[in-house]
Image (tube, rainbow, N blue to C red):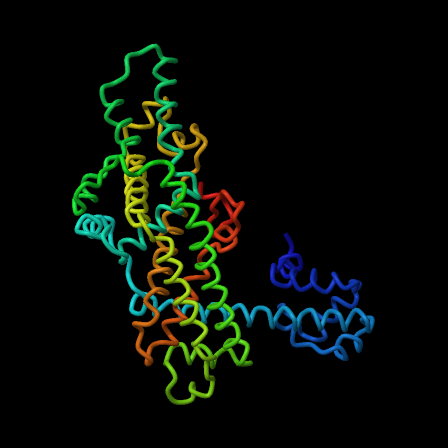
Length: 385
């Protein structure tokens, strides 16, 4: 390769040449832009005005379009950077402002200690977990997996391993002695399919709409505040530093509508738990937890003739991914946080709702809102189950 050829091979300049060519410029004009105007990068190109381009022979209409498009791209890049900074500013407040989710062990202990006797945090978690598990099809997996285990045993004409029965029992059993010990006379026979279906119907008709509407109200409040500031840096300053000093000039909208939405959400939860709703949701959440834990057993794949958990789930037609766990955690945290809206002090109230809004942006609300939706998707758009 000659020295002259080496001089012209420059990926950045190639991008510039390609960009100018998109607007119908011939090689002569492109060369003048590069040599006479000193353009070496797309940033340099974005700094030009229409008169600069027409002076070297570019058609007026093409020059106007090129300049307009370059400026729009610059604005879009700036807006994206501002949005990213805004998101980082909000995320720094998550752990300190919003309530944390108890571990499975803590939740089960709370349930066993009497969580089924009244509506409390453990009940909220149980309702969300039970409803989401049903929506995602988790309760159908034990039957499908048990059937696959038996079919594989028949195909191989081998005696089933003794662990088959233990694993099958862990997948299909419905024993609630631990969580119902606090209530004399209550046992697993009370949790019938009819009561399960009736509870899930309440969730569908009452709780899901209230949860979704709470976020719609929250999003409307935040977007109104966001639109009131032409300078994103001022909003970021307000989020980072509260509302002291210069940031106070960007006053957030009144939070009364958010408290109303929170009250509606709490009322809806109480309606769902009327009668025996607390006990049914506890049992269903307990089942979902057992199913999830059993699916992690390393012995299961071999018992249906596959090598690993992913192949096992694929064989029975399920596609459980980490997105399911993340969706469940985010939804539980969101509901717990919104339900505690009245306990938030005035000095952190606005930042609390901003952090809650950012958490809400990570939940696929479209999938939770429609009555006919049977699948749950993650942020990637893929089915969770």
